[in-house]
Length: 195
Image 1 (cartoon, rainbow, N blue to C red):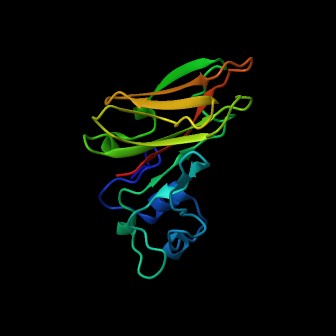
Image 2: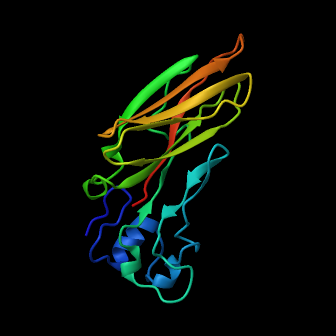
């Protein structure tokens, strides 16, 4: 079975599938793949203050009995820095760019009701940063939009919008009192399937 887009499907999962997704060395031992161990880091993020990292592994134990079945539907987060991100806006007082979520989620993770998380971050040089990250959970088939809250009289705001189909739009804009430095930008920091 080939790993597609950082996710393991339902059904039989082999040792090789697990190693292909999470890394590791031969000979393969499932004890290397406990949640929180060297290769399987649990999904972590703190909205607004920390980047997305880790994997969605709801059935992988931290110790004790472990089997390949624990890895069904596991997903490793795609994570990016500004320099490696495939989606980066320009640098201006108001910016926007879109991408296809199907680039990151395989077909079996894009059924109505499936969930995924998208994370954005402000590019270097953005002025008036109050909240550097935005993480938003979406449900396939349901349009939704979320933005960073305004905390200051001058702030660069991020927004992530999903059209309910295949398009995610990242945007940013300056909001607040007059300033000579209203510019900023946004980049895709991470994507992970959460169902």
